[in-house]
Amino acid sequence: MKLIADSGSTKTNWALISSPEVQKFKSIGLNPHFLNGFEIIIAIKETFDKVNIHSVTEIYFYGTGITGADKIDLLKEALNRVFPLAQAFIYSDIIGAARSVFGEKRGLIGILGTGANTGFFDGKEISKQILPLGFWLGDEGSGAYLGKELIKSYLRKELPDSILKAFENTFGKIDRLDVFKEIKENERPNYYFASFVPFLKKNLGNEHIRSLVRNAFTEFYNHSVLPYTLNASVKIGIVGSVGFHFKDVLLEVLDQILPNEIEIVADPLPGLICFHS
Image (cartoon, rainbow, N blue to C red; front, side, top):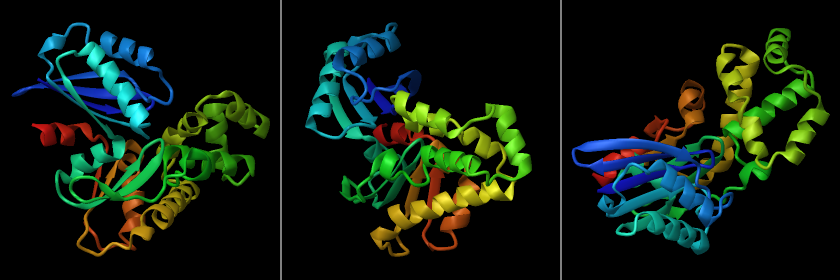
């Protein structure tokens, strides 16, 4: 059987393929920057405690935090400890996103979730990539970036009265010291800021909020899409919950600039199941 994983920092979606049956599982995120090998092994064992581990012969793991050979080796060793007869293949989340949308065809792939990333996929690998600068220096258009822009607008008293009232009814009053405390004490401040995304989605009908989201996606285009100098034949794929749930605003921005075909999907796992089936 084949086992496929799409792993972020907060959760991992798994698919166990025994043609034609597909079983799906969920576990915590298995980012090797946040978890050590022992913690990853325990999480995988708990997830597959009722599965015949010796029936798994191939594992395709796509995840965030796959930044070098050491992280690949750590994940391979952990997977092999749980599934001793399986051959494990480890890839970055952007390869997973590209294979999910394009299969073995070329295109520009983008991720818009808690974080943001883009790369040009040549059908086999990411052949060109704008260096992702992460939450503090980049991630334009991501959930963390959107939340940060909302908080800035709130603290600067730029929110219209109706949105201000809705914000404080939802989160209470927040001052800059509260935010600084979160930044200092929270190991993953990007997730703190991304937690405000549902509020933005709920209030997207307000022009101030829509403009905030539109500006964030314009910055995503300027810094993460424009540098690739695409011709019109190149398909663009966007994967991730933020791109999907704000799809109309994202297309409002991109369609005014680009003639390219654009496909936006929330979850790469269905496409990866097709790819590996």
